[in-house]
Length: 425
Image 1: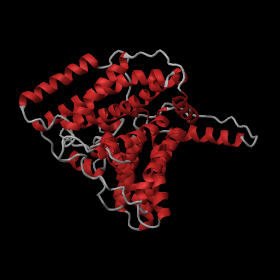
Image 2: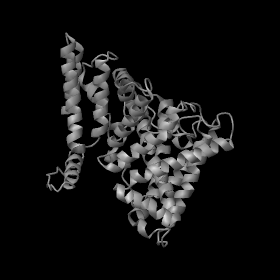
Image 3: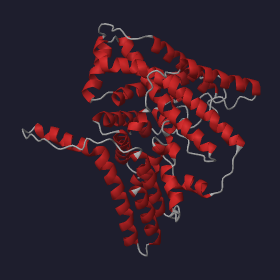
Image 4: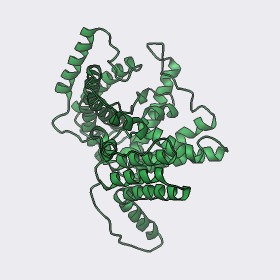
């Protein structure tokens, strides 16, 4: 409530400021307090413990006091909502909202509050302020999107999680094949989990006549890392592009400046995900992957849909997709591991091929079947937002709904349900 009132009040003050100095005062006050809250609640423990560990190498030992508190629900997402609103007012892109209820709804609209997508005031506020009536066709699309999101979450992601959660903590006793499979399954766990949440959020919003920003566009069909980041967590990637990367100069200027801006963006993106060095390494790896494309000016080569006019990709496209997926999976190891040491040791264990451990294979079988269904459905429906939304025949479309519902009931991992991964961010 404080954060919401702060940005609502400072937004009005910024717009009504009589001079540039006053305008800047209210702008930086809002930005500082917002980032201050995020810094204290999300990063304070990380900074104080990292500082203590660093100076310990010099023989100085501290025992810092940490907060040890539960991260406030949705703090990363609603903070970015507020920041984009304040920045857009400061840049004269929008007018300050005078109705507190409208603004409060923009910040905390319940489908997207906990894990996004990260909305813009320019996109969501006008929809909130306009009169809405029940739209049957939009509601049908919303229910369809909820159904597909539920499939990705409880069938794909949660089945993958059973195997991944068994292997990652016990990686010392797992074989190379088990470790590689766990990384492969984690890639689809985090995709099914997060994109499944996003689909359900977008679908629920449609029931209320609201269109939210699309957050995923079949990222694992990307032909290079640049395309992957245009298709993965789109609302966050575009937020950093518009509010950080472009103000820094973007891809203009010297080679050094381009590389510096790229690394800054990916470092911030990694750090946004959590207060752990593993996320920073994850960001650095993606920056390293992206830099050659930027320097060779190939970072915008693939703006169209893969195999746009063909049923199957060419051999070159298939190899590009597989290589991009491989790079992504290597980075996911650091994202999943609790520490850098464990992530490196995990990779070492893949190479050293130790004794095979006993791990429940049923979850792996369910996972691979569900992933196969996911890939086929998304490949055939990659031209639309939802894979089966382009099926024209009513009987075939209804049969598809029934099959997905049955898959959810009979293959869904309901015994040990997993919370959404992005709830922790």
